[in-house]
Amino acid sequence: MYSVMKYKESYWDKYLERSQRIQDWLTRICAIFSAGSIVSWSIWPQIPLVWSFIVIIVQAIQVILPKLHYQSHISALKYMIPSLKDLVYKMECVWRRIDGLSAEEINKLMDNYWQDYYKLYNQYIGATYCPNNGKCDKKAETARACYFLSLYGVDAEAASKNA
Image 1 (tube, rainbow, N blue to C red):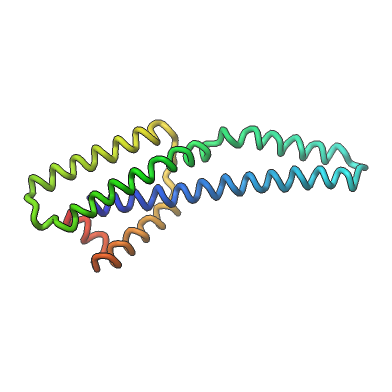
Image 2 (tube, rainbow, N blue to C red):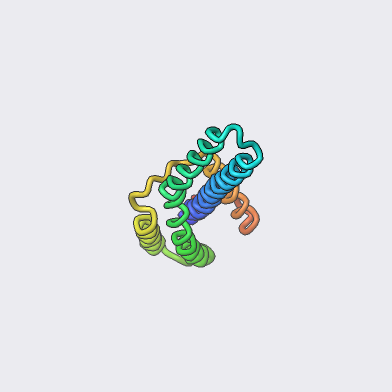
């Protein structure tokens, strides 16, 4: 369970990074094309139709940009990730003393952690469409494996069997 939550934390981190990169890229491209077409219009006034068409397209994209799903992902994940990190930290504290807990106590803790995760998910993501991303998945899997190997000297699969 701890391993799975660590994966989810890493996945949402990577997903936020990706969404922010896409948002930044689109914003920069729009700014460059908008400014470039206005400057080009003043330098080459012979083809105003081309420059005005480019400005119209860029302005339309900038109007649509806040409505793209990346914007809602960024907003939701900026609030969800810190709470998820807190949850994973609580799990890490329990992980360190897991040998002293009974199976019943472990099961109760696992149920509580899953409930906490689903509350976070429903509160921040809810009905927001977040498609699964293969690149984020691979990066999160690698981050999780590195985390468990560096901190505990075990691979993530061994960690998931113990918690």
